Image (cartoon, rainbow, N blue to C red; front, side):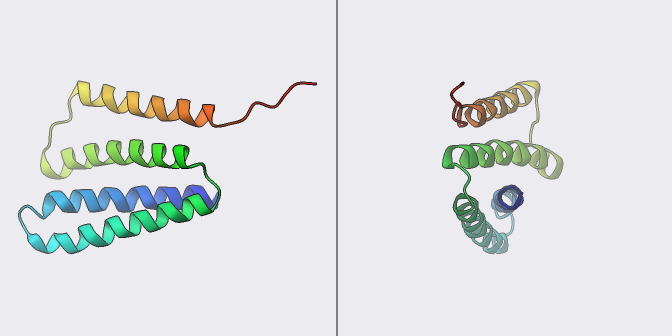
Length: 111
């Protein structure tokens, strides 16, 4: 459970950093949040890997949920488009990550 909480935190921090990058176009002071956020996200992702999560699974989930979260919040905060093709694309990314997660488990040989 600990590694999932760390991964969730890494995703939230990365999304905040990415949204701050968008906000820095108007106010450069947001770049401080960008740098701190990306640094924090990578530190948290490192802790996830040290906790024993496979790198393909951790990075896949991090990337997929980070992409989805960024798209949703950018639409809400900045009026970015959030169209049906974007929703389908996010669904495909999440589906691909689920396949990676399922494929990462070793088969237990039968008796």
